[in-house]
Image: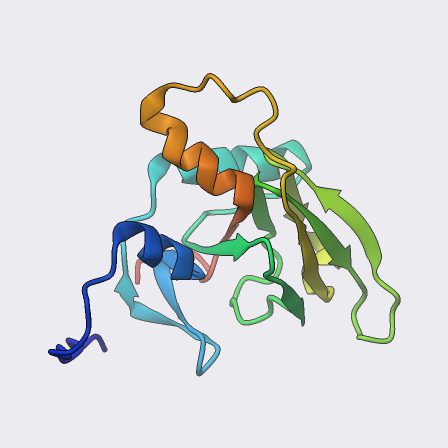
Length: 188
């Protein structure tokens, strides 16, 4: 249910930089409804084939199978965090969540099936992938802190056309978490 936002005659247009700085998440494939904590099978964007193949291969390397159907891409600024939560609304809890990190290092906490379990902290650095399958698929997890300035060592001479991306990632983190939403009993 997308409707146009009425124009405010007193507001100034946002610059591309300010839009990116305000961005917190986007959805690829099946869209996630944050308010109702559900996926809408009738709202589906294109899912990138390269991302699908990469995530299916990563899952397969550690003994899991996934048909990637949706990705929630989180954009973290250096002062961002993500409270402990469960990824538990997909029909296919037996399929893993595959997570790929880009940019600044994050402290990732992996807990247990209840909030009473003391979480294990670990660093997630740019290029790291996590496959949460089996027992860990149903565990609480979160990101309490982003470590600013931990990306980009050695990228001082990057091609000019990528310099904006490098500058963004030196201050931020992007996490792409991919999941299979529905059982494959037919097309939706």
